[in-house]
Length: 260
Image (cartoon, rainbow, N blue to C red; front, side, top):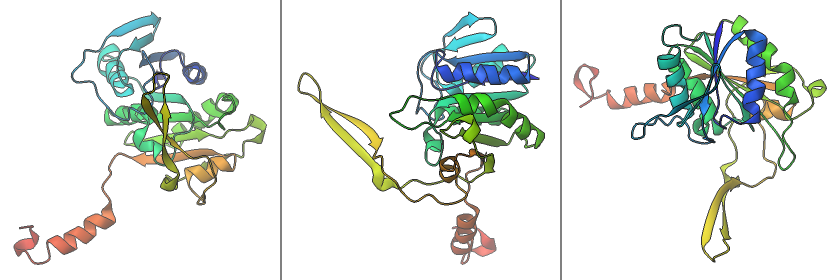
């Protein structure tokens, strides 16, 4: 099995080393294409106005001046164009990628791009509790086995699997829970305004760190219960309930059921 590894934290990120070790438990044919610098929060952005510069770090290990999406395209359609990968692993991200993170995350975007290109793709992230240092041990202990189980489940390449490891020691992990995408309390979203040394204002986007209701069955709830969260994500964003209502409303009074 040929595996392509990428991330959004950059070529020197500790989580990339964790993921490389996970991949090598599964295969001896592992390739890495990761961003030259941190690309956290770039979502599914694609570089169209800037050239992509590829640097070979070591054998089968490349850094790309671009986004995670660029990295996957470069890996699948250039470096491995003659023998494409069978699996793409993206991560292990420094911090959770759940709820609204799904729309912002470069880690998940790398897996999404793999899915678009027809390759089974899994995004992996390690939760941690700020300001404590990140502990990668849950991902290290359960990463390879979790990926094996997901591959054995036979989910095809049209579905992206989003895996989040809880912020706890391996012996405290409470199994795997299949979850749905959660939702945070957006009242916690805030702008932190500050003044720099020259008296100029600057701003950080962040969330207040206080408790909010966790709904059972969601990714946020599962990791709070010290379980590994696995959320299957579909690339088709069409809301079928809204689609049906709009069809009923917009086509009701038009000939042949066509919109005016």
